[in-house]
Image (cartoon, rainbow over all chains, first blue to last red; front, side, top):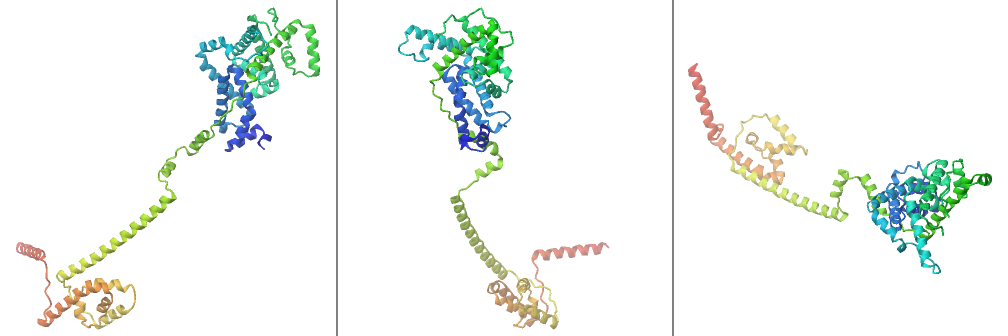
Length: 192
Length: 259
């Protein structure tokens, strides 16, 4: 029954002391919010924490949700704020982050058996550069590129979620791609 | 391979470029942009570079994120409800007071039982105290000197009227008998044993002790005086009152002499 309801109807039920309604909202959006947090923070643990805190903050602020914006926009805004807060905290230990980047092989994907160690190392370095390049983007550009790449949202969906004109969204994605291209070209690594 | 000698896309097809890159152009737009790519080297080169970036990010996503399990989100429903309760409840002084004195049903039954026991005990104590007071009053009346009030001569009509009033079984007449009983002159003027006052009082077992004894005593005394001397009884006054009258008499004498 809850699955057939819209997000806004679920929020109304959740405000009326119906925990299952908020549980349905969580089920609908947890993967996308986790993806957004992962793209914004580039770290699994931080992304998990941010996603958890996003939904807790949303639940606690349910009475303040007036329905002027879409639930997806509301959740994304909370998630981005959580990510930026977490990023500010981790900036104070930026050296630790760089150390982690240097030890990237320990936490990246497990390569197929047929690949040589040199190739695996090269791939890991490449991923590390991409991660750092995305992480170095300004927050507004990073947000749209993550929504586009990780959440696989259309320009129209991003526009509605962020309450921005469609042309602004496309312009931001274009600018983000341009900056990423410049950052990645500085690292002379071949695209595998 | 990335080319560092790329040009900026200043031809005004930036939005179409990203839409084409992510496959979000319609049929006509698609055809139009492909035609533009054949004439614009900058857009063609930029599209190739952006495709590389897109591929890299997608590669990162597939290798580091796609295999990650979605974290189980735990919402502290109970904790979240508390502030709402507190905001409704928000600690008003009345609710705090009510909580402080809130009693369970068992507590209420215990309180009721103890109150009933207490009420019975207080009732018994009051009853005992009342009996004791009555006894004290009766004793004090028997011990005290009889105060003889000035005699009032009554006509037979009045005494008959009194007798009629007292013979009526009116409840209101009962309390009237008690304050009037200590008047010995009534017994003296109406020595008939069928007098309503004496009869009335004797009907009530309680006042018999405290009212009849002094009356009988006083009546006997008055009879004795009448029989002996036929002289009106002297008013017996306490010594202090006698002294005061003497002093007053002296004062009046002094005033007279001065005048």
